Length: 34
Picture 1 (cartoon, rainbow, N blue to C red):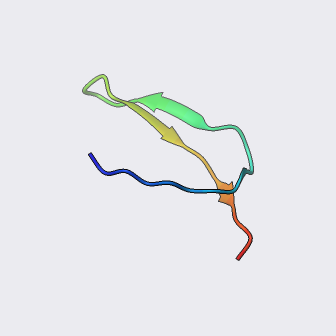
Picture 2: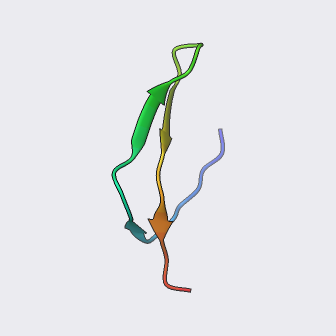
Picture 3: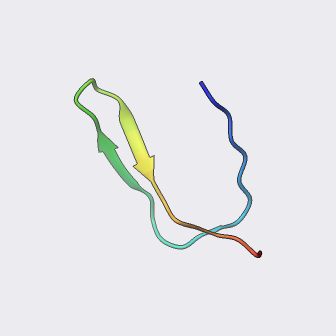
């Protein structure tokens, strides 16, 4: 398992879905100041 730390603002609500192997996946957009 990889660990990532991101700092910013969410630009919209996360999209959560379940993969075939009963694994939950979240997709989101992040705004950063760079």
